Image (tube, rainbow, N blue to C red):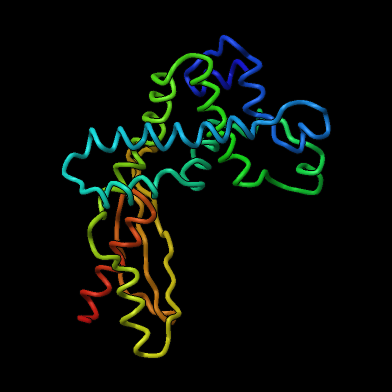
Length: 223
């Protein structure tokens, strides 16, 4: 567990709290111990609360609806799964045989839930400030990316609606390149329609790169 504590940049006073946060219900059932379900419940609320404060304080120009959209984008399974992958949570989870047998990788939902449980464990072991530091450190970039296109048109939806007129909506988005260091990575996306390349776009996240590609496709097609 020491190496995980180094990964999350926090040392637990109560090591049992950390162990419980990493204990899936499958393992708990098979071994007669507590699972991380209650911690996950608490962590979900803490994550939403603290991320809301961060967005409110750091993006004062966003409207209420825009702040809600940004929060929904980052406080989700995909974002939490990325954190779990980056911090190697899969190496420390306690899983039952039912979750291990015949499976090549741990389910995304299990890893995402474990992040929420660890956030709650950090709070219970110390205070909200420690949980806040963990959340900000690991979601700051995701929040920044989410604000890039908030309030703008959903160009992917507009493109699909425009092309539907022609009776073919075989639209595909492909990430064709990644540039720069991990902390400043730029993604390059290509949008294809009916097997034909329409445009490419760049962004600090895959989603923003795809949105930019869709915007350029609309401009190229003049529709």
